[in-house]
Image (cartoon, rainbow, N blue to C red):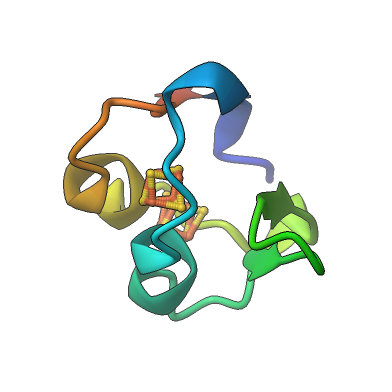
Length: 65
Ligand code: SF4
Ligand code: SF4
């Protein structure tokens, strides 16, 4: 069952710190060559909200069912 409805990412707020990628221990978030987070493997996401919590710029908004 998918827990995640959506992960909204606001690139204009992101400072490319990479903390969200480190915080996600499910391997959902990785950084591309420009250190921009990419949300892949969403089926692994358990809606822990760590990525949203760790982002100091409020660039991530997780919505789940
Ligand atoms: S934690 Fe926030 S600011 Fe840092 S890379 Fe992730 S989305 Fe961007
Ligand atoms: S909610 Fe948790 S498992 Fe899902 S992408 Fe964010 S840190 Fe990873």
